[in-house]
Length: 158
Image (cartoon, rainbow, N blue to C red; front, top):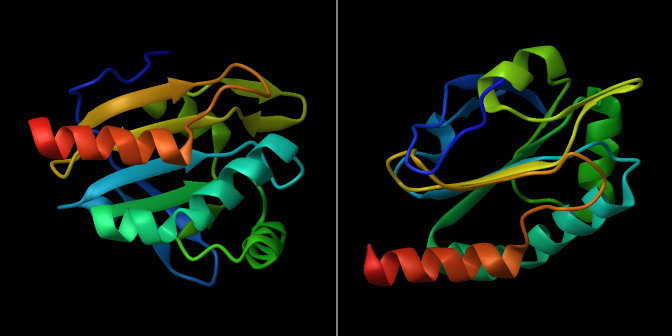
């Protein structure tokens, strides 16, 4: 398994979206700074806190031109309830295939039960990775304020 490095182009990936349709990565983030958040599942308190924080940062992210997409292995009904609970305004994918994602993105996988560990990417407008954060357990993930700071820095020193 290879983890993505800064400067690499984010691979092509399609995930079913809550509410219908699909999320196409990195295409749906093209021409803007993007954040891809893989969360363990709606049951994870750390994931709940992370995605709620990214939702609260929506105004700041809009000002900075940052788009956010999140997904997990949770089924559609569970994911839809999660989106409603946290009033998430960014696209959320469901039913991700952990065994397909693992070799593409290098995410850590929990085997029993099967789910992806928290993984986060910040992408430049050209779909290259600015930073990747891989967690092998419950903690260690992107923070909304850090993402805003990184994008501000990239814009100023681009």
